[in-house]
Each structure stands twice: as structure tokens, then as C-alpha cells.
Length: 90
Image 1 (spheres, rainbow, N blue to C red):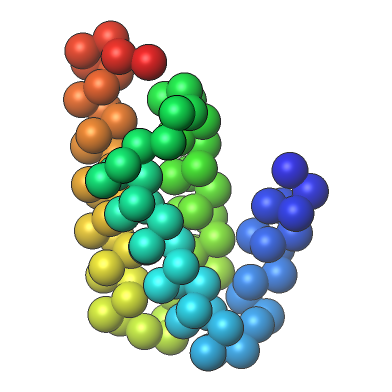
Image 2 (cartoon, rainbow, N blue to C red; image 1 turned 135 degrees about the horizontal axis):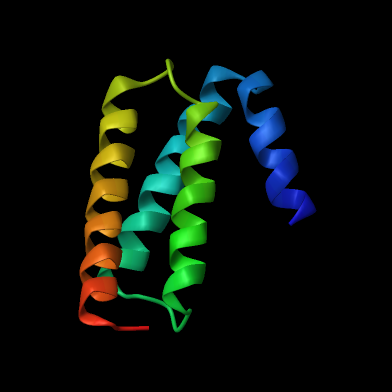
């Protein structure tokens, strides 16, 4: 929890290259979670998505294409989680 909190707080001060890498990493992680969900409860997957959005908020402004890729993956995963919740899936 502490590591995640620190990442949110410090990412904005990183270099543009580091923020681009972070954007790409978070987009890839969300794509992987959507494509092959880990055996996490839905609440944990939602918490990861929310945290990733916080991290990426500090990365904005360095690469519109990577930001769009992240936004697309976040929307896809969010829709999947919403659909699972509507079906009552864990």
C-alpha cells in the first residue's frame, strides 16, 4: 500500500521518458487483466484499475497516443467489471 501511495505521489516529478514507460506499463497491465483475469476478487481488480488511473493522472501530457491506449484499456476493463457485477460474478 505504501509503495502504491508513493508511486501516485511521485510519478509527476519523473522524467518524460519515465512517465511514458509508466503509461505503457499500466496500459499493458490493464490489457492483461482484461484478457486473462487473475484469480483476484472483482473488488481487487477494480481497486487496481482505480489505482492505475491515479498513477496515470500524473503521467498525462507526455504522450497522447499512450494516454489514449491507457484510456481505451481502462474503459474496456471497467466495462468488463461492470458487466461481471451486473451478472453477480465475483
